[in-house]
Length: 163
Image (cartoon, rainbow, N blue to C red; front, side):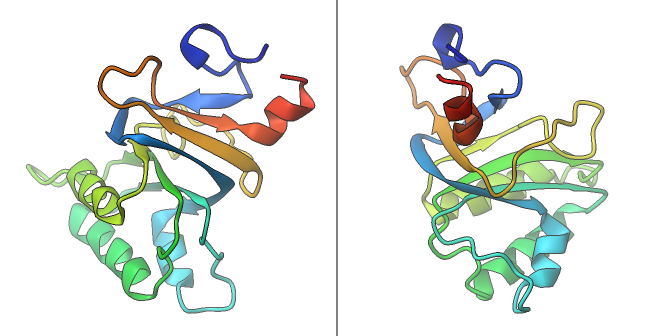
């Protein structure tokens, strides 16, 4: 099996997050990337359709007010309507004194009322793993008393490996 103790993914089968933001489980295509770029694409023919998707977000060097502006742009453009789950990666060098990027991101994720995790090793940090954007994935965000870590599983990889 590609899942070890507690359903932790084997290398390449998925990633473990630092914490659950909102408990739940959802499956769908894994889409997203750098938050700022997604916000700039909103309203253009190049913006990905996120309905039913697990939205993966990360960024670097953007202060909390800019992160809030990007999330607001996506929300007002309707780009976040129907998102199945939120997977937050690293937001490197994004805090500004006492203002934390994580607080802005958590608030936005909670407002969408979908399962969400934070602290995936995806972004512009030293621990920076490639992810199969466009492939099917499952986000597992355990609630209190549920076993296992929050995690993002790459379903198509796992299926191909025979798990």
